[in-house]
Image: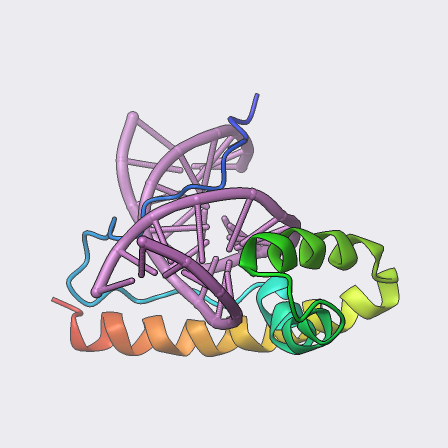
Length: 94
DNA sequence: TCGGTGATTGTTGTT
DNA sequence: AACAACAATCACCGA
């Protein structure tokens, strides 16, 4: 039984590695980059609280094909993060 | 071998 | 500066 987090309040400064080899962006992150301006374009009054919620709602409304595009981008980002860590362990091989 | 855990990613707007 | 919902993620490690 996977402990699914119901609250989205993760801890920000919870890292133990001094180098912190980051990870990769996620589909939503990339999607938000493109949609953030579109959502705001239709909701110039909506602040993060509004846009944020609306954004996520739209994300799910997005066609699977569309999401697939972002997922694909996330894949590239992943590979990028992989190199990031690669250098991290390389310099920090210890 | 396998699981699940935590850490991370980016936006905006506020205080 | 940091946080707050929104969602995905997924690499990492240990037992």
